[in-house]
Image (cartoon, rainbow, N blue to C red):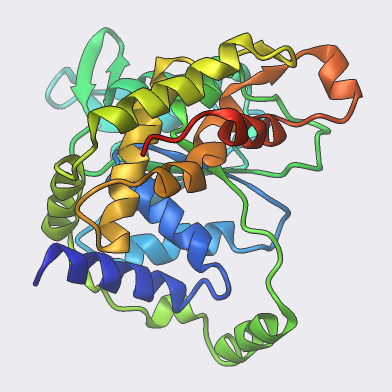
Length: 311
């Protein structure tokens, strides 16, 4: 099987369950293949959890774990804890749910900042330091975090450093009436996730990740990405601009997206199509810009329009 076949099988399998969202599915898959993490911010019931479950079910051998974030959740509930064993008279480490391939961090903004920060090291460096001991996070380790954009009571907004660890922020939105009717038909007797079968092995997904890193990214496009991100730093409406991490993320996601498009090179159009998902959530607008109705996605759209495209 070719790399393109593996990508197509994965995409079709997830789309068969998450109906009416082919574009978002492709972007989430691209984020995973790029080695990043994604934040899904949308209304309840739009399929965020189903997307995570379907992705895990489509990969043979992938370990999936879910953490429901609540105000009383502790860092040890995510990372793990050492427990004293009286028989051996030594402490034994019990790994937490962060030691997995795909982690669903449900309603991440409901946990305290202390617990949210427990994910910072894991997401940024693929390791967890617990009681002074460093533990490597092997495998895929793909975090899909969700949050509700309209309900703020009892929540703790993610700090800028945490937001910057997410390679992308996406929204599912509502599907068409026809697709919603198809969803009802799919779940008439059982949930389609329960009927899913794996379509790709864990090794094949790792091969996809390696193939994405080899997709050609020209010198001109590197300068184009840097120009796009650097333009946020001098924008009058932006208080906190995007860092070089945004440039790296935009390059990697574009390379992964090219794999799903069946291309062996990145085009400016691919970069533009994911720029808002990669850059917008990393910025903070100036107070006067917020009050005037501006948004970070609108700023990114303006930058795309005004930044010269390499030819």
